[in-house]
Length: 85
Image (tube, rainbow, N blue to C red; front, side):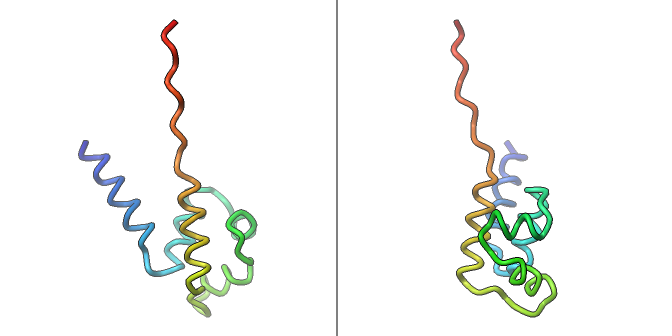
């Protein structure tokens, strides 16, 4: 139960992170994608991701929404219960 609470708090912290660089790092960590793959799958240009990671841009609201949406998509989908036949 306590572990579940910590996991939920971590999800909340990441999903509400203000810094786009934190979201990028978390997306890459959870998905295992490189910069190009994250750009493709999240619908963000690779240049935008590079500029954020290098501190040249904060990305803006649209970028944050796309990163959060991508991170949500990585949540595991629960398996349907197996019939005990």
